[in-house]
Length: 397
Ligand SMILES: Cc1ncc(COP(=O)(O)O)c(C=O)c1O
Image (cartoon, rainbow, N blue to C red; front, side, top):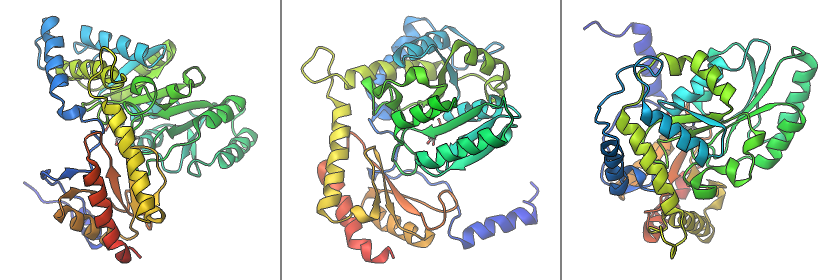
């Protein structure tokens, strides 16, 4: 095997010198405050069994898709799943991609054209940035969740841009790193009145917010005003894959032009069946206790944990260190890679699985611990974690 070129080795060394070298580790059996499995679906035996039944019932006993969806990789499960997703999310249609990364790259690399403009929130996910980077449209970022700044940029673009250029605006309904949310109804209003096409990435909202976990756009009844939504299945849904929700014509366009859809093997049938089973389970866990289909109301447990965590932040005088959040994602700012890493290590030694998020993943000075809450975290675990953090606050500055 030949060695890595010297200039790349130097890049690695620089990462190491900045305390930002990434490496793969195996999960330890600590208390989970780091996974995106907000509702415990990834390890849910009912979903696992139901997925097997879905495949067996349809006599669909294949291991792999066998090809791209445009060649041999499409099948009845895909069609059934897309119909289910469109109905569940109150969308004209749905198009399944292999991952949220693929969906965002495919959309933003192919839909905005030369002469168009993409306006993206300053904290938008890397997959959207990568997609925009592959496309031909101009792009500008607006200040995080700042609608006045967005409107000012829209006005400037309308003055200076191509007269018939489209403006796309993209944001996340729950931000993956900060856990906060934009004012979606107000943002939708700004986009509608300025004739912009709004795209919302619901990766961290699906399963948690909205009717039966359908997401925040549906919570506010905004579906018809949006150009597209991206829902992903690797977070609260507990499996893998993603879908773009939108119009029939958008779907036809993506099938023809989104390269991350066209030039890749389809998902294995078992993944499709797992998504179907997980969506069925969503309506069970969101059903109020006492009615026919209710399981343990897992969705309610998560909401209660979020409330209780926020209450404990106040009681322990820790709010100043945390980014305000009503979602399952909470961030304790610990500026400096070295300090954030050290604190995460201390917490891990106390049995809490908390990961540091370092620069360059977040801007310098915004390094943090990212704490994910779950339906299955116990009150004493959350309290124990916050008390352990409290002990270390003198080291933050
Ligand atoms: C906001 C957001 N969009 C998209 C993705 C990508 O989704 P996936 O993990 O399915 O590729 C992520 C995952 O980290 C995310 O946080």
